[in-house]
Every structure is written in C-alpha cells, then in structure tokens.
Image 1 (tube, rainbow, N blue to C red):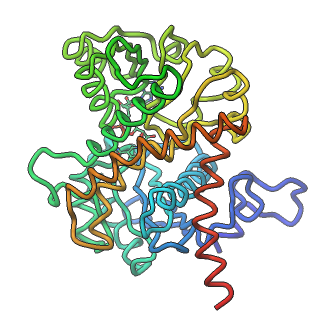
Image 2: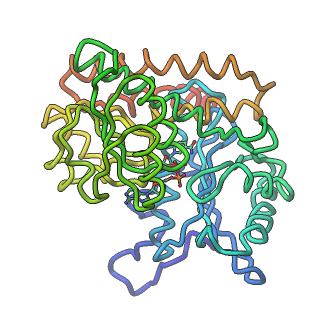
Length: 370
Ligand code: NAI
C-alpha cells in the first residue's frame, strides 16, 4: 500500500517518505506510486484536490537523488496546483506527477508511454501536461497511451510552446509589482535578474527586453546564457549569486526553494516575481520577505498563465483570445494581493493562500453538506 511506504512499527520517527505524517501532506485525496520494472519506471502522482474539477498539473521528469525528494516535490507541487487553479478561477482541481528519471535518457518515450497508462487508469481524475524535463512533444507521446493529457505540441501551430502563456503572465506580474513598489509599470530601465533561461525564463527575458528592461541572467546551461547575452544584451552572473544582484526584481525561473534563509538575507531587489514553482523553501519565508520589505509575487499566482492558456481543452473549446484575456487579468489580481498584504502588514503568500483556500473550501463545504 502506498500509505505504508517507509513505515516501520519500531521507528520512533516517521521515515521521510511516510505519507500521512509527511510535513508536506495536506489532506491530499490520493497519492499513487507507479511502477513498471520492465521499463524502469518509478513515478508518483499526487492528486491534492478535485473539489473544483478534475485535478490538473504537469509531469516533471527529474533524476531525484532519493524517492523522498520526489515525494516531497510532488506533494508540494500538487497542492500548489490546487491553489493556482482555484485562484485562476478555473474549473480544475490540483494534481501533479513526477517521474524519477533523467529526461535525457534515450528511452524516454518508452517511459512516458508506460507512465501514460497509469494516468489513464485514473480515468480523468487527473490530467497531466508539461513541466521541467517534459515538453510539449513529450506530452504527445504521453497522449499515445493517455487521453488525459494537455499542453501537447499537436494542439498548437508548429513551434508554439505553451510556456509562452506562462511567460506572458510573468511579464504582467513584473509590471504589476513595479506599479506597486515604484508607482509605474513602465519597465524601461528596470533591472531584472533572471534565474533560469529555459522554456519560461528565456521567453520572459525576451518580453522584458522588448519592454526596455535591463537583464542580468544565470543558468547552469552556459549556451542558454550565451544566447540571452547575444539576443538581449543581458549581463551574465554565476548561478550561485544571481539572487544577490543589485536589481529591482529577482525573477526565479528554474527550480524551487530558492527563497530561503540564506538567499533572502542576500537579496538586494525590492521585488521578487518569477515563474518557478515552490519558490519559498518553507511557508515562513513569506514573512521573512515581508520583514525585509520585499514585495513578493506568490509563485502560484504569477505562473498561472500556462495552465490558463493550455488547460482549456479539459473543460471547453480552446480559445487563444479568452486565454490571453485571462492572463492579462493577472495584473489586477497581483496588484490586489500586494495591496492587501501591504494594508494588513501580512505576507503576500499568506494572502494568496487564503484567497485560494476560500475558493476551494466554499465548494468543498457545499459538497459536504449535500
Ligand atoms: P525548463 O526546464 O525549460 O528550464 C529551467 C531552466 O533552469 C533550464 O535552462 C535549467 O538549465 C535552468 N536551471 C536549473 N537549475 C538551475 C540553477 N541552479 N541555476 C540557474 N538555472 C538553473 O523549465 P521551465 O518550463 O522553464 O520551468 C521553470 C520553472 O517554472 C519550474 O519550476 C516549473 O515548474 C515552473 N513552471 C513552468 C511552467 C511552464 O509553462 N513551463 C508553468 C508554471 C510553472
């Protein structure tokens, strides 16, 4: 049984991959461990909530050092999807999956097809899509065995990547936070440090450059940095100091937990607004940012553009115009969260969590009384 993994009658402390006592377990409806030894598949699907609709969220493929790391990631990411989809007013719950594997392995397609069968078996309770290590072309491979796949390359014109929706949301977020901290959303001359130049970060860099911002960039992939330097006149910084640059905005667009005790104390930016999921290492880091007077745009709010743009196929006919209008709406949502946080001296992350939870609980309470 998945729930008994790591449990031992004699252990005084729960093992790190125990489910119900796990520090990141948040009443998740379902956690499914998927295995196919014939192809070397190890994966975990976490369905956090289906209160608002089928759980939707991407599939991450990463060579996690331990199963416990993968579990922690999927528990946190799926909860984030519930909050993201709720606050975005989408008729969707939250879920996510992680495949424990190196995305560059040559038999990636075999793994994806095998994993697709596990998602298919959930019969639509969970819809999967792209995330780190799984791109739109991979989503088409998943779709060979799984009807519940969105953000597929074949759903768009050639060359379009749905991460473009996410990047547009990021641009709106940075405009909104600049309006909040500086009184103007004109980005000319605004200095932004971008961590991660992948599908989202590179596109965000393009939008910011067009809007006149000055960029400092970092990535562990040197070619991605060289491209941004050439295309956008960006300055390059080492990945381990990108957060500490003398800029207006720090934009994390790589992995999670980048806002922690150490990095927060080293930030020079007056605002943090980026597209990575789970930027706060722990919830208390939202308060740490507030205490330093740094305006933080909650990650799950600003990076909702991707799901706003790509997930429409789950519940209705896709409309690029409707998606873009919704993504534009992020500007006002973010301004309102930041204003409430300022007025009430609260961490913006708490304000956003509370707004999302209220939407989920309103429906869940209704169901419970039926
Ligand atoms: P990606 O895999 O295309 O890009 C990530 C980039 O970060 C890569 O270029 C990688 O080399 C770089 N990177 C990794 N570790 C780094 C480090 N320590 N320092 C600097 N750079 C580093 O991923 P993508 O799609 O751009 O996603 C980035 C983040 O945004 C993830 O947290 C993802 O969950 C989140 N996100 C992505 C969405 C999308 O539409 N793609 C939607 C919502 C959230």
